[in-house]
Length: 281
Image (tube, rainbow, N blue to C red; front, side, top):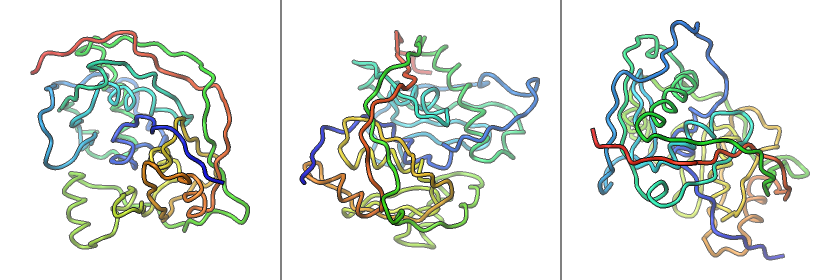
């Protein structure tokens, strides 16, 4: 049976670029040593982006965002910070259409030795404080009944290969990626997913970090939630359906040995009440 679904849900680019940082284990430094704000921060409106990366990255005590809308920044700082799926009710106008470049730093040597997961978990509340101060962001949460697709293993099991966890990235993310790709041409960087030439391929990635790309690839009009029960790291590959593909979901189900189940569940939803454009500095 042919299946066709509506336009894709807006997703932050960081869901693809920073897959390793989305794990939900929590570091526990003592409260007295945890900084709550960045020491310095620069925010500028993004220009034309024809070089390098887009999304967010964190190295040492530095947080960087490039070509990110306020919606996407709120998604990273609030809605994507829980092991349970949360949603964002997206703001309109410039909140959705205007992109920003941010460089924020904290002078705390303890950040240097953190894992990607620990650094992400410690910086999220600092990014929240930055958005509230510089964008004058005000929001609230609601529990909303939300249509979703639940991703489960099909009969016979998933068509993925379990592998060891990827090594932690030391130093600059982009330099590490360039070095890996030079030594391993054509292979995706461990812990991330790459889509090109009609196919998406990932190496040493969690299934929970793939659902964002799956959500986009099936042209879904609802969120995809992982209930596969697969908790390790996996190599996987699936066809990248075209926008007008009548059986996008069926192709991915076949390639991954999984199935989608339509449901409606209550999800915590972040609602942007108001925000102001920050001054460039």
